[in-house]
Image 1 (tube, rainbow, N blue to C red):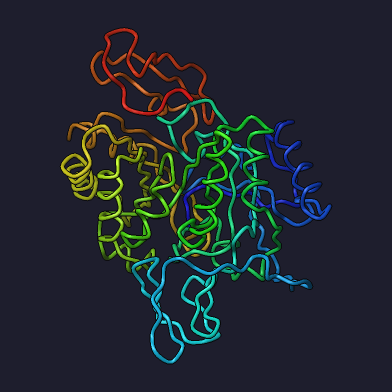
Image 2: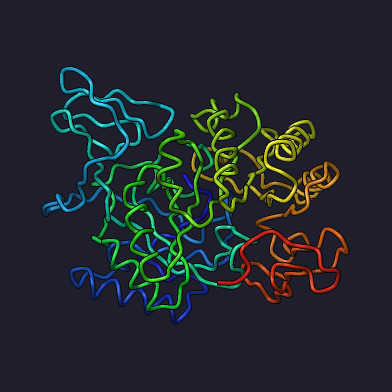
Length: 409
C-alpha cells in the first residue's frame, strides 16, 4: 500500500476545490455517465500528507458484484514466466508466486488463464482525485502544482497500519471501479491543469502495466508521471515500469527485517535494492519513513537508516519522518509524539543528510526546505500548500548552492 490517504467517496471531501469537483464531472461524463461519487471512486483527504495521516473518512466498502463484462480490464501481464502444466511464475515482485490455471497470486489482481497470466486491473480505477503534489509527499518535485491521482485495487503486502486497506486489501471485483483508459487519464490531466499523473493510494506495483501505458499516453501530451510505492519489486520489472516515471516516492516502512516480516508481511532487502536501482537509473526519489511508536522508533534504527542512505543514495535524497495514526490492524498504539519525529530528524541531520522533513504535523518548521549551506528558507510550506518557492534555476538565490530536485515544469 502506498502511504497516501484515499478518502472514500460517497461523502464530501474536506477542502475539495472547484477543480476537483470539475474533474469528478469529467470522469462521470466520460465513464458511462456514472458518477465517481456514487461509485465511491473519488479520493480527497486534503488535510493529509502521507503514511499514517488520519483519514477524513474511513468506511469499509462492501463487496459489490460486477454485473457487466469486465474483459476490458483484462490485459496480459508483462512480468511472468510460463511453467509446465499451465502454471506460471510471477516475476513482478519478490514473492514470485507460482500460480496454477484459474488461480491468482498473492495480490489478488493477476490471474492465470490457461497458462497465460493476466492483470485484471488495467484501466480499472477505484479512486481518483486531484491532489497537491506535496500530498504524495514529493517536496522537491514541482512544488505548488497539482497531480491527477489514481489507484486500482490490490497490494503485494499487508501493512497492519494501512489507511487504504479497503481498496488495497480487496480483490478488484469487491470494490466499485470505472474504466479509465490511458488516453482519457492524460487528457483529463491536461484539461485540469495537472502537469503530473500520480499512481498512488493502493500499491502501483500491482498495476504496473496500466501505469506504464498511462505514463506513455501522458508523455505524448507533455504530462509527467510519478509513482507512490512500497518499492517491493523485482529489478527487471522496476527498471521497465518505473523507468517510465519522472519521479518516485518510496515508503521505507522500517529498517529491520523483523518489522517487514511481522508488520508489513514483506521483506526489507528488496526495497533497499530497489532504492539503489532507482539511484543508478537517475530517477528523482524521495523516501517516507512512517514512525510507529515502540516498533520502529529507536535511535539505533534512525541512525542506521540515515547512515545507509548517506552511503548508498547520497546526502541529497529527501527523507520524510512522518507521524503514525492508529488504523486498520494497528489501533492499539498512540499517535507518534512530535518529539520522536524531531529526534529522528536530529539524528539524520547529524549524520549529514541535507533534506530531512517532519511529516503529518501541519505548521511544523521542518515542513520547509532549507538551504544546506546558508540555512535560509527556500520553500515555505503550510500543510499541503507550498506558500513560497524561492529556488531559481535549481539554486539558492541567497548563496548559489545547488538544490537537487525538479523545481519547474
